[in-house]
Length: 269
Length: 340
Image (cartoon, rainbow over all chains, first blue to last red; front, side, top):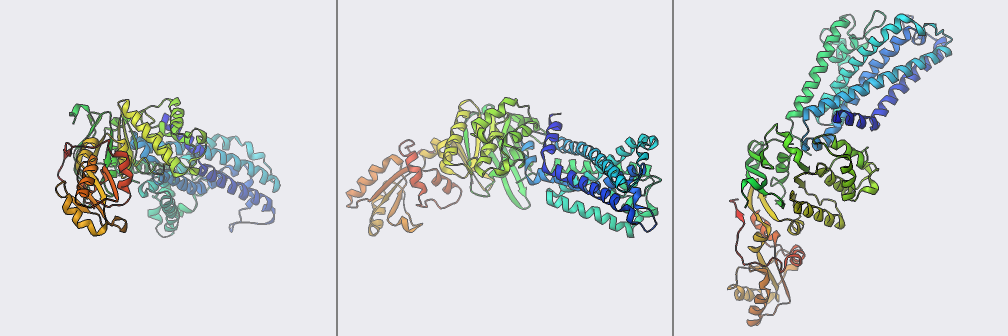
């Protein structure tokens, strides 16, 4: 537990934590409020879906969560890579190993603390997004009567939990990539490349890409009312339940690779 | 040398290869308990590789290590609970303060009492800056913090890689005093360094490594006693005559490394025989214009590691004052020699 609480303290004090959260919250609030302020003047989708739906409850809950898990997934990749990569770039892993700490334990607990921070970030961002949607609804003269829809609110914890699980899996990929690269910058760069590369590849290889980590993360969150976003491979997207299992497989696999590599690695510098 | 039972650290046939290069080539070290052990070697000799193996950062390809009397194999990480280490440049979380860095480091490995952190900050002179972020620290301050970090668990064996790096003179003196005090308490301090003068005034025992092998190990005093030198300066046109005159005393070499060496000779005799050198030369009508004596770790080091034996540059002069007289010896070699 000493290592766990130490990891949390380090993350709470780390500027990257607040910058990442601030950017995600800022973008979400900006977009939602901007949409609310301009929704009466235009239609934003080719299929005729009104921009107002982003600020209309109870559907706004899902859309905000989808935004968070989509862009938040990319931020999680960057954040996970930053945390793991800095241990190598700054040489701080070396200290703990030289003090007799288990490398595997150190790396796994480090990621557990990242997962806890992701949970906190998800809740904060979601709350900010809901608040922004209420403001946007007022600006767009849309009723907020759906805010207390009991059916939606009842399913919200499960949706948030699945969203957290998906983002944690995406963060684990960044964490593992940076561990393998032994570098903060390389980990972030390669993580971003993987994220967008998978999205791009889904255009040409949807039947393969639908099994890849970012696609399954998005597919695991799909409901009847929302699509799974750019990574789902359109009609090829996996069913949510099946995707959820694969999210677990990718998460476990990424952490096993990170732990095994750390255990075997020669630490220098 | 002490028996295995009293060794704080021992390696037997330690090997480490990087591709075709042998970084460690059968290294045998015997570090007695309760001493400051100077681990010397030129760049690339294998000092840092040894430190990394001893701290579990890398794994040896062969050989064995004993730490505090017990085998230290892969997976024996708990053995490091009794060891403190500063390997290469000290590294920290730049966004955390000195105090916070020590606190978070203390969360790994063995348990550290919280008051220990304040004691160590005081010991290394960082109390006033303990709350400042490390990213604003100078190299010397980071080095002080690194030494504090190495001492966190009050280790019985302290492994320090170039601990004087970046320290100001006062910091070096304080560090030296601290390490000597630790040794006096029965703890063992293993210091890897290329600063021979520092090792000469601090270490009780030295090990000299070259090309991944130990070439000499033993108590510093005994090693130095076998390495006395008297340097004399005569008029340049009399150097050849002076060499012939001094040959009966011992080996004589002309110093030619720099322009400043003009007229200087080095005579391989005990450091306390400067008077004999002067008298013999005077007897031959050659009068010295400069005379220095000492027992020089640098010379021993350079000879054993294949460097130029006598550079004639200021190093010798600097060391002479510290050693002249104090270590004047009889020329007997009692250190443990190992084939290079």
